[in-house]
Length: 425
Ligand SMILES: N=CN[C@@H](CCC(=O)O)C(=O)O
Ligand SMILES: [Zn+2]
Image (cartoon, rainbow, N blue to C red; front, side, top):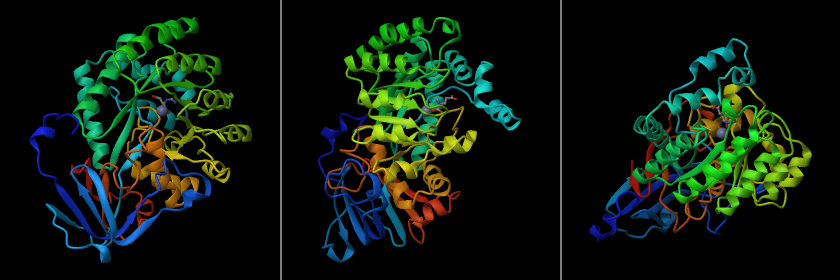
């Protein structure tokens, strides 16, 4: 009922939607699992020839068609030949941005690296300049279009970061746009404050002064206006050091903001250890990993998040997800939707890329893109699986041979219907 509080008083009848003859209902979780780890990721519990019942915005029942008694419903959705699964949970995006960076895409084709482009004032600083010059309304309109598009592609819960503002005013502008999206769209949106995305040029020679702005100027405003759920930093050589990242995590903790940190994208600088020490909810990227990083993640509650379409787009190594899972760790998959390294919010393509390039099985990839993604946004209690009492965020595929077909036919749009909070969008 987000964005429509009065409706709760106006609607008196329960709206029932019954999905019948489902070829296979997948990602059924009955035991309150909040995340799936290690070898368990190979298992995707399912029922063949199933039904699913939704009342208002909640999943209330499911089972084999043979066990479906006579049931009245306001709407019956015949799913003969179709797979039904929970909507994707995209736990890492930068979906709010201004303009695009297709020139840098061509520059990379012509031989420049991400680092070389950034050193010339491109990259994050290029996006920050564009965003600072864009009005809040225009930024909202650009972002809204992207959000509508990713929902049509099956995203039912999403995290969006700031980080292209890099001034107090522009960071707050981004976060207000995220807040407005959250108010006006039916899906849950978690906001992450990423003031520590890059050093603005005017602070190049005095990094600590910018850290001071983040901690003593931006964070208090973000917190007092209730604009963020999490804090993030780009913990990377040439960006924010481990010590600076720790300072930001500690400051955010005082405002009750857990961290989700960009780390180990290009270099190993012991950032993961610092994140685990500060109980980070997730560590994201991890394209370069050493055994010691994996050891540190064991026995922690921090979710490793891989972003395979970022690796695909800027031709960097893929996160060694097999090593992580072999170590018994959980793993989430997300898009990293942003104008520089991943101009795509397509979770289907993320799942396919994980299977094709990282050799994850479809079961592992689907676990990573649903329940584990929800965990990485602190949303697993209500999203990410077919569970009685969870929100009805449901994908219905077209008629396909099996769920293997989703990553197999990687370029096809295979979703027929998307339901968010009990309503087809
Ligand atoms: N690595 C840091 N941030 C983004 C890219 C930002 C940009 O290039 O605009 C990422 O997650 O890939
Ligand atoms: Zn990112």
